[in-house]
Image (cartoon, rainbow, N blue to C red):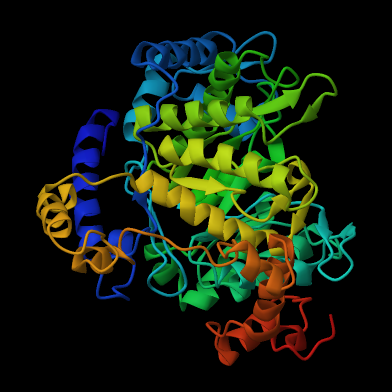
Length: 530
């Protein structure tokens, strides 16, 4: 079993692999699709930004162990209590489940650190070791900004499918986590099964979904096994994981979510152990205290699942959220949110655990300037802190209450720029460019025609797809469009032309025969009316 102290070995391996990435763009299984490396790639190494000092990290860790051992968690289901008590835990007279420090430390040492999430086709692997960083969607918003009217409305299953197939085309969005809740589903089982189907049919990238009840996990698993061919093939290269918010902050277990977590651990499906306390509301107002509680709650869930299955693939997801203390509402785009989530990512790096976080949860209702600066700030800090999976990084609006399809297209540009900043600056004999400088100053006097400039044009520099870099005159001649207009046109093009076909007709027929699928086939071929 890997232990937390092997982090240095992981990071050394990461640096070696990153150098190879720059040569052949083969990081974490990505395809060698270009003869030269790209300016950015999935899994670019973060971890340079550290908002917490090393003593701060140690103090947060010690505080988390102390709180687990003395305060513990309330409302623990019997099946959770049984596992923890059998390993030395206790249920206090107040009904709180406390965790012995030695158990937590043993679990931290024993958690898996070799998690690789896959897509349905090769080239979309997410290697969650070290500080590799991947961008994804997410949010589970109840509403969507209607692409045609610009008005907010209830989200549907088809909206979810459309969001997935947009993400399927975007280079800088590496995985698809459910972004909207299909509010047209009649039952929780219909919701869970059809959410999994719409996501898996909409993109070949890795998919993360949720399960409402423990008994629904088996249906999601059966769907994945059908697509993969059998359970062994899926479990060897899992293309779906389950998001689980297993606590109701502060410090209370959620029974149904714990049952989902247990079933995922038993079946071997990767899952995300998430805690989402809001500072000043359901977690302490101090950012350090909010991080401590988030770490406590997340570790409590992970210790339980480690006891269920020591080989389970659990992703560490402490997600301290921030409250606007004037209103009590969540605020996803502020500086406090950015630094708190980066601090949580730093704690994950301290433990050496595969991890995920939330960033990009702008408070703006539309993809405007506020949306841009809030998303860029929060996602940048999370990426530079080395968070493995940054969810909600694209597409979301209104503090995760809404989704706008054109936002995915805009945010794809933003994410590319952020990834380029995370890549940083390589300094070696070639990049110092002493010979290039000498040749140019003794020659043409500018670098535009230099072979070195031409060679680095597409390896060192990233160019946006919808952001406008034209001159004012050219922009005016084009009708003076803003970025939303350009993005809507791009989104409309994707929705009109891109219908993924990675699910064969035979597999789709089997899925529709075995499950009550509500997404009509014509919606997947462009024949259905919007």
